[in-house]
View 1 (cartoon, one colour):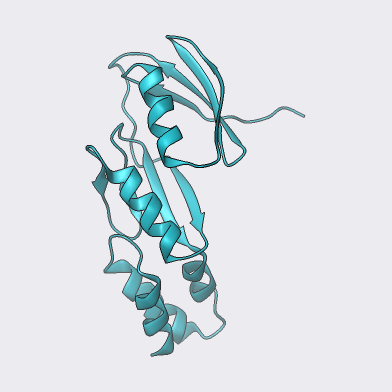
View 2: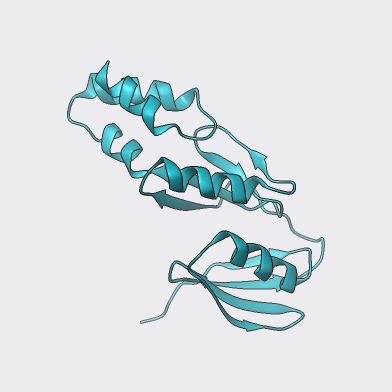
Length: 145
């Protein structure tokens, strides 16, 4: 069975990319790196990277979803991914310093949004729509009414 692996095009040296993601993800594993290509894993997900020059840019049509246990994880990933040129977006989305889009989402959000009480889920949705970084305590308050 073939595997599907994201292949990312960067406009910077790959040793910089590898060092940056290693500093963010505790479960980062470097597999191979050369000046033009790299292979690494984050949380068991394999990525391939190319130092291909300025011909392509990332956009929000593709993003990587980080499902977090709670606020502490959300805060940690949010601050690490937005450092040194990253940009906060709405509703848990951000762009890192390379322009790669990430969604940093606590499990609580998905739990509240799938609640059979649709009024509760809608309150949580409206609260989330007003946020940049997701605030678990605020989601819980919205769910409680």
